[in-house]
Image (cartoon, rainbow, N blue to C red; front, side):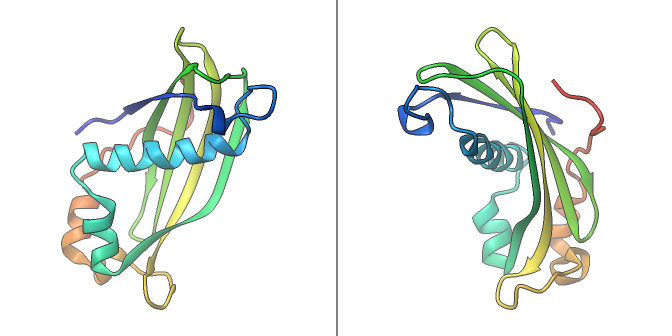
Length: 147
């Protein structure tokens, strides 16, 4: 199972402000894309494995720190890794680099497992034991470094 999964994106004009510089919320969207890619590369498909089993993975916290601007048509490499896991929560760390490998942004998202119907937090090990067994096998890395 890969500890780090890199998603490569071409910056689209719609992700930029009128000056052609990536608008800050676009990075949060890229984090979501990278997180889904991380899960998929590690054998977990969000819709089939979480949603269809009645589990929603909600964002409880998000942070992004901007280092260097990206512009329309630039290449962005978004690296995602899982840095914390419990039966109720997950945390991911992300690094965004440009085509030259320079760090452009980094951030983190925190998530809770909730019952899709009630939106109440759940202990995944009790709510969906088979799924928890697969989630518990995901690689967790240290969350203290960027890039």
